Length: 311
Image 1 (cartoon, rainbow, N blue to C red):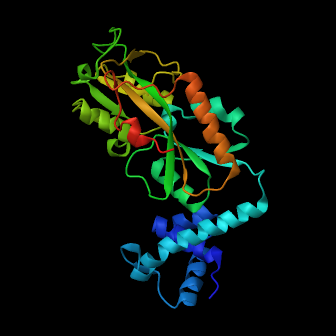
Image 2 (cartoon, rainbow, N blue to C red; image 1 turned 30 degrees about the vertical axis):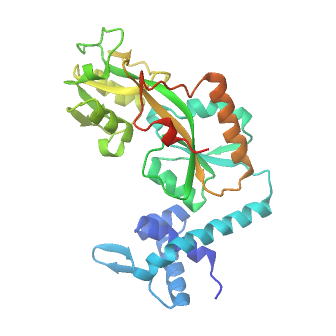
Image 3 (cartoon, one colour; image 1 turned 180 degrees about the vertical axis):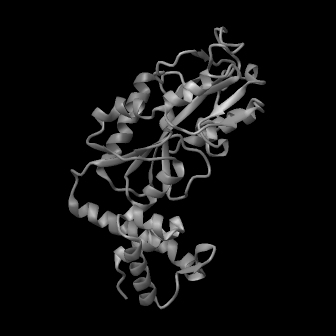
């Protein structure tokens, strides 16, 4: 039995999305075309892979068994194509955590890392799916558990985080703040806090009970919302260039200083020739710019570096 990889790819995308319309959109085909590919695959295998009912789409037991080796087959096919294409293809890299401007860090190593092509990552789950599908070769952002077993990562940078708050906030004139001083203020988040692991863990660790969420319409809009209310604050890496927002100030956090951990993420076994160049460039810049300094007596990380780095 010879499998058609286009049909297998259609199945895997549909299994990941559990929605034929979204899966078809990721493949740039119509929903009808995706349905036909899956129907032909089911006919070839002689079994149903999906069950479609009023509540949506779900995998059958056969579909659940078929998914892991189907992913492996796609990865092997993609690796075979890459080997045939040659060594000079660019490395496609996605980023996530856009509000914290991950491109500032990547820009410092891009010239040393060979040819890169940037993708359009949204968040860690969507970037993880893109890596596992083979759509991209690497990704850059903050990694946090649980992480898929088929992925590896390397810690690149630990960046001090400041509090940003309204100039009318009672603590705005302080030269520095301890995180515990922000109790009683409202942590303003650019989205649901359970999807923003760093802010969520900060709030839990330092007992910030008042929390509210906005819609992420960009850094300028988000910070304008912070400036509008004298009780609000949020967190940003200290080196992020702040837009010109009236009534906003930034205050360093100390005792301890929260650190935002940036990591490079890739699929285990990836043979892309550009990956070694990118990881080497990140390691060289980290050593040169002292990006990985961490003192547990004075700094705070949701996960210590020993757990976050796998070389």
